[in-house]
Image (tube, rainbow, N blue to C red; front, side, top):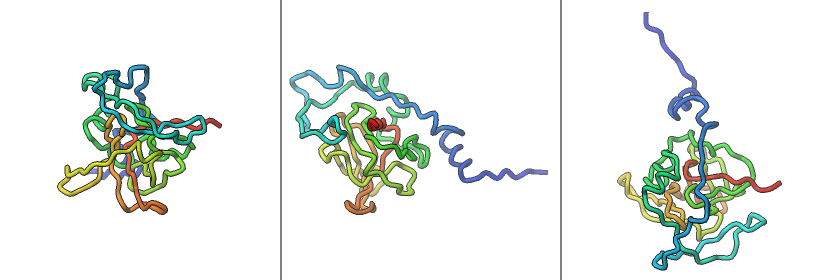
Length: 194
């Protein structure tokens, strides 16, 4: 006699994400240190905003892009972070460790720590990925056309290091009508001081 195994929706999601408890095990290793920026005079310069002591964007600053050889990125990032940020991958829906985070704080690039999104712009989109209706600072996000699935989408990248973050869509809530759909593996969350 054959038996039928029925799994609940949460159980199916956990299996799709690599097993039970995956969200609690998400490993994040932000890249940091004195060697983030390239000191070479040929480095491309970009305009970005950092987070001030109050958690708000600073005035725009012109800085050298963070450029590292592929071998260094592989050493600094986990396999999943590398696959997504440097290889333009996507994590499975409902599997990211930051999807359900509701703490106040700043979501930074896992590769260079640039502030990308703030918790006050996060919303529940129902798509299975952390979603925001505006970036921390417009300068910190670069958009480019993505035809990888045979239709035009708008990819979003970190302006400072060109890490792949996700995509932006025009089905978000007011006031912007935008939905920045992010991979948790491309982000590191920094809580605001209490």
